Image (tube, rainbow, N blue to C red; front, side):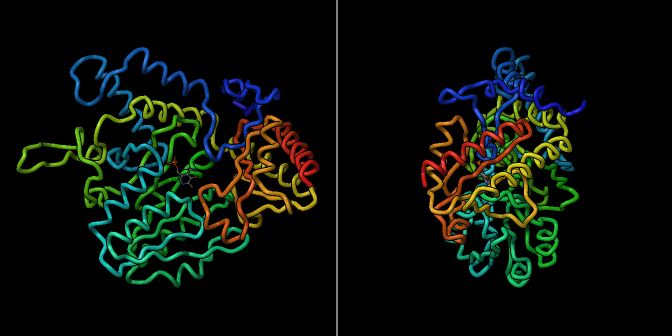
Length: 405
Ligand code: PMP
């Protein structure tokens, strides 16, 4: 069916809201996306009709819940073209997935081993690795970026050596929206025998990552960035890696047999899924994947690119406007400042006009330090945004500028 933004918006109840007496313009999609009725219904349906704990019960409700949860795992597997569903680990989100892998590598790294992080990571793809380095004596090295918001690939190649064990990099930067050349990053790392973890939190609502084709070792994401619920995400790991890594947490669900002398662990994926999971969230994650595929990723890209291009042109016409990461391929994120005005002040005034944007360092302080700025205003568009909303953003930014200058 042809893409029709008005029809799409009807499916998102929150978009009918008013904020500060104005119709809401929601442009904070990179922080979290809004939820369509189909996802909300899947949660309500689970809690209203078949709420039960999974994997353990012989009764009908437990079986229905288990089937729905495992069907969601299968949807995730198929969507990301993952070979085996046992390579799909349900997590509470991207942060959890990264910590799970970083913890696992504690027993695999030696003092003096090197791990590479990119200069444009979210804090959740920096801090767990710093903690890992502190525990193991491994050394953290940084792949630098340039002012256009690209990683400097020549420097990356020079950093790779026989001591490099791991490279972690985001697929798309949350602060700038710039797209990293992960195919090349993975290829080069593998040539040096290093494993790669890609943080896909910002990518999955815009593109479909084919994980077998990429050959990536680990890929993590959060459902809430893709129209799904909060508190659930996925970690993909190549089976050989997941077999090698020790469990992250101990508890129910992740064991084969427990005695006080010795416990044996369950097979994949349950080895990494201790305790009662976010069952409703997992089911909602599956519903979100179905929903996005029904809209279609080509239609999503087309709509988001037209919003981004139109907004970029309009915003750049404002005196003193600086957009960061222009000059590199990127998604529908515009991270900007106006000369002499603090981003927080612009964000606060935009909110008064019903427009939701994010201001600050976007959990990517090293990027802000690189540009020597306190933060940016970030407008991030989703396929359910409209050109009229861009007009409202631009008019509001002009008004804020006038009030603050
Ligand atoms: N990495 C990136 C690139 C992100 O944008 C985010 C969310 N802002 C995260 C990691 C963390 O995701 P979560 O808070 O869902 O764990």
